[in-house]
Image (cartoon, rainbow, N blue to C red; front, side, top):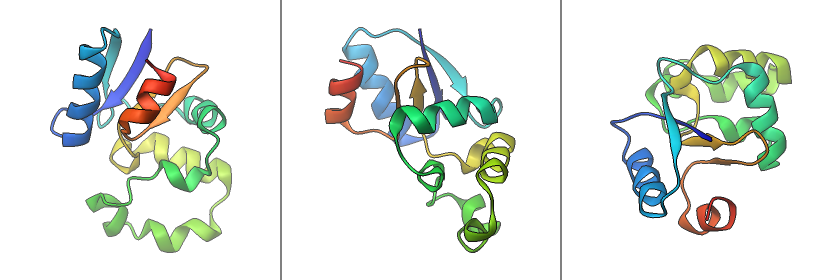
Amino acid sequence: MLKFYGYKKCDTCRKAERYLLQAGISYEFIDITENPPTAEELAVIVKCVNVSLSKLFNTSGVQYRELKIKAQLPALSGKEILTLLAGNGRLVKRPLITDGKRATVGFNAEKFADIWG
């Protein structure tokens, strides 16, 4: 079953949920702000999506700006980035969806159709 890490007040998450519901795809919703993915889960997701760790950040989020993450990123190791993301779900780009073998970060209808459709 898919794990859907999202936030109920997020418009992008709601669009992704609508897509999955209309496609008849079942998933387990996990509030990313209360239960963010672990560093290990995030490492697997990065490999599945084949993106850099920096692409997992919610760059438009308030906490990203308040914590000045953009300035910190060049000095952080991969392990430090994963620990930072796992410790604060508001820093993670959402929705983050995975079945352990495949994953998507954010919402794009075409990518959803390719991966989850």
